Length: 125
View 1 (tube, rainbow, N blue to C red):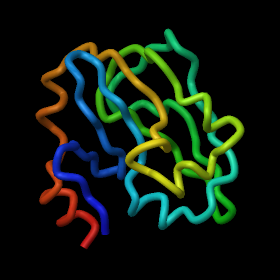
View 2: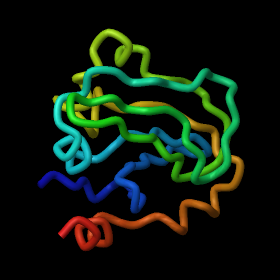
View 3: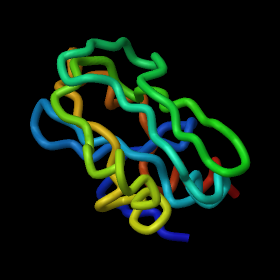
View 4: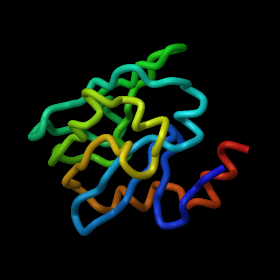
């Protein structure tokens, strides 16, 4: 199971890559495996603002639909437009090309509530 040590994780199976005040968010390899083949991703619009824990979109898979919960609050800076035509990038490269959105954080202290790789391993085992 691939769990990169340079990322932070939520209990809802999102990963967070921190780059200054902006974070890139996606779902974990574990989560995409549980969902199965991703067929559609509903994304928010750049400029939309959310609080930590809000649903920012959905991932539709063959088996189910899952909400995308924001692990930190802020304003959507960018969405991965490649997912509109290639939603299976989430299955192929969950931690890379399958990223979902970038958010400019409103409060970087919220990162302290997230898990490190070891903590996330404990959640899924």
